[in-house]
Length: 93
Image (cartoon, rainbow, N blue to C red; front, side):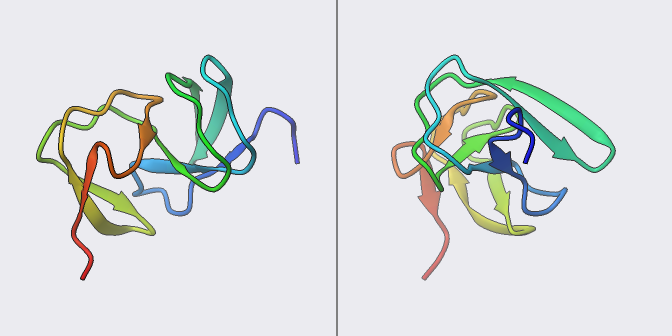
């Protein structure tokens, strides 16, 4: 794997990518989304296998992972931010 690709976008519809290594704040990552190459600077530390935003998400907006709604933003989530229970309300269960 190219060292610039430290993450995985599961489907092109997703709003988040998954870190494939422990990533630190200010790391510049590249995410392939279809034919586009997104260049994102992380705003937070992202633990391995956790999510970060690949676009601005407004508070109350549904969030997609696996091409499915997995929750709703409980606050605005900036591009490159860590996405977890502090800013995402689960819609599972």
